[in-house]
Image (cartoon, rainbow, N blue to C red; front, side):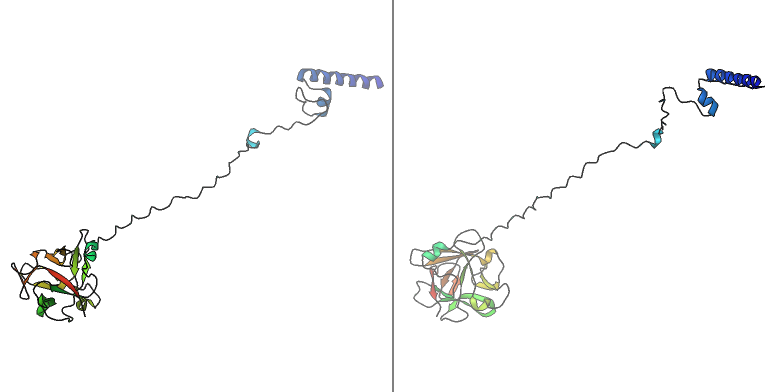
Length: 232
C-alpha cells in the first residue's frame, strides 16, 4: 500500500515539474497557485511597485519671484511761465525831473499863466484849470507797452473806487475825454517827448501833439511845451 501511495506522489510531482517547464514558472509558484515572478526579479522576493505615468508627480516648475516695479520718478512738466506784463520804461523821464506816479498839475510851461489840465463837465478834459483841485490833480503812470516813455494819465480823484478806473483819452477832435481805463487802448496811451533838459515835454496822443492856446486844446498854433508841478 505504501508503495502505491509513493508512486502516486511521484506521478503528481512529475506532472507538476512538467507543467512548470512548459509555463516557465517555478515549482513553488505552481504549487502555491501564485503568479510567477517576473524575469530578472530579485530572488529575495522584493515587491516591485509600478506607478502609472498619469499618477507620477508632475515636474516641479520654479516660478521666478515677481520683480518689484520701481516707482516712477518721472515728474510732471511744469507749465511754461507766463511772460511778464509789458511796462514802458520811464527812466529817462525821471532823470529829467518829470514827476511820475504821484498827484501833479500838468501845466502849460511858457504862457505865463496857470493853465492846468482839468476834468470838466461831461468828462471833457482841457486846460481850463487855474488852481489845485480834485479836477486838476493828474498822475502819469507807465503804460502797459514795451515802448519807452509811454504813459497813461489817471486823475487820482477819479480812481479812488475799486474797478478799472478812469483814464484821459485822446480824441479825433480838440479836447480830450475822461473814460474807463482799457489796458493797452491806443487812445489812452500818450508819448512824452522831452523838450530839453529842464523838465519840459511835449504830449503826443493818438491824433497828434497836444497844443494849447488860451486854456484850450487846439489843432495847431498854440503852446506845446508842458511841465509837471507839485500838487499842493
